[in-house]
Amino acid sequence: MHALTVEPGSADSLRLDDVSDPQRLRAELLVAGLAVGVCGTNKEIVRGDYGWPPPDRSRLINGHESLGRMLEAPSDSDFTASDLVVAVVRRPNPVPWQAAPHVEVLGPAQAVATVHDTHFGM
Image 1 (cartoon, helix red, strand yellow):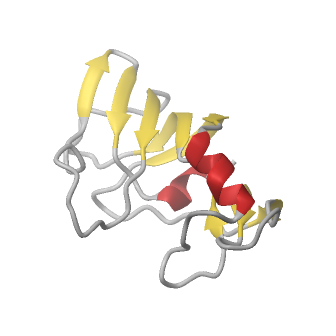
Image 2 (image 1 turned 90 degrees about the vertical axis):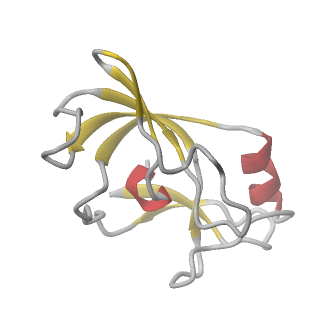
């Protein structure tokens, strides 16, 4: 898949890379990205002012605010193929975010889901 990646701490290192397709873990959602938003945090990351990659990588996939279409979900979830979802991405944080472990269904084809950032490369 294609992903916008950046080397955190290096200004203007944003580039489009080919990265491996994610493998969904049992309790995770796999979503095909349709649109990604650019926020102030993204701008800080691209400038090299903020951000860090996951522990096993040197580059960070940018674009943590996104809309996608559900590809795969746990069989015991309320999600089905083709549901539209909005991702809220949070990696482990020393101060836990209270909403992180929850999935809230907003309507028949809308959801807010917390998933790992590698599932949203565009």
